[in-house]
Amino acid sequence: MAMHCTLITGASMGIGEAFAREFARRGNNLILVARSAERLHTLAEELREKRRVEVLVCTADLTRSSAPDEVHQFCRRNRLKVELLINAAGLSFAGGFSTIPREKLEELMAVNMLALARLTRLFSADMTSEGSGGIINIASLAGLQGLPGLGLYSATKSFVITLTEALHEELRPSGVKVVAVCPGFIETGFFSVAGHDPSSILLPISDPSVVVRAAVRGLMKNRMRVYPTLIDSLLAFAERLAPREISVRLAAFLSGVWGK
Ligand SMILES: NC(=O)c1ccc[n+]([C@@H]2O[C@H](COP(=O)([O-])OP(=O)(O)OC[C@H]3O[C@@H](n4cnc5c(N)ncnc54)[C@H](OP(=O)(O)O)[C@@H]3O)[C@@H](O)[C@H]2O)c1
Image (cartoon, rainbow, N blue to C red; front, side, top):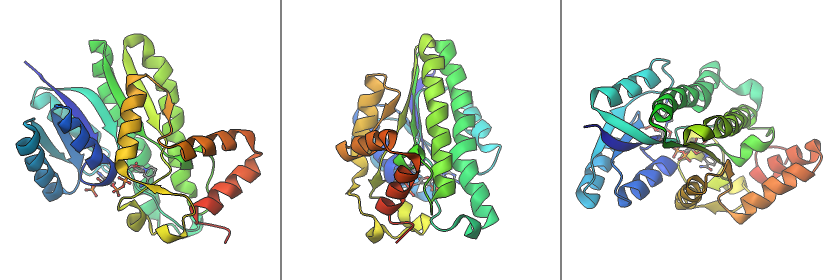
């Protein structure tokens, strides 16, 4: 018989790791996906011991176009039925658009968009045929408008929001829930990878557990979009009301990436 599991990409640290800890606490078996094998194995061992759940590690570099198929095949080979897919792997780059190295531009688009879309396509097909399942896509407040200084990142997150909204409706009749989570700033290693100085950010920086709690609530209530904090909700509301130029400038100012 197949083993029911939650698959988490980006599980080696930050928000993905926080999801792994929470779902292990809830008794879910896990499949952890990222590149850092050692970190994944250490986490897997800890969760198996502490929570008495099955935790499998599937190391994958999601910039490789074959990686999503390999992750899907790993699940097939090990008779794992993914009931919940959490697409948390992602990265950013802070700085002027013309300064982004070509490889970084491609890496960002491959992980944030292509891998997410491919994994969602593969696992949503399985879930649809089962008539149940859930997908949590980690987007960002940055995806609500273009963000000068984080232009490519904000564009990839707009993609995540738009795709997720479409799938939320498209898959609803089949019993599969799909939610986009749009956090503001979260305390993880994300900023150092992006070259974004966190001391320049004018908004509060929250703990990853805030994202996890909001995502779980959103999935249970079958929401299309979730904003983890009150400030995130207020900023999203303001973004809808304000003229585009104002919301773009305000978001850039609050993020501390441009226009200072
Ligand atoms: N932190 C924030 O302020 C914030 C705000 C809004 C949204 N988000 C979103 O939240 C998600 C998680 O970010 P985080 O804050 O937790 O960042 P993080 O601590 O830097 O974690 C990023 C995760 O993505 C994985 N990853 C990156 N490149 C990968 C690749 N090529 N192949 C496979 N895995 C890869 C990393 O694992 P390996 O390096 O081991 O591969 C790591 O597990 C991202 O989608 C991000 O855009 C973050």
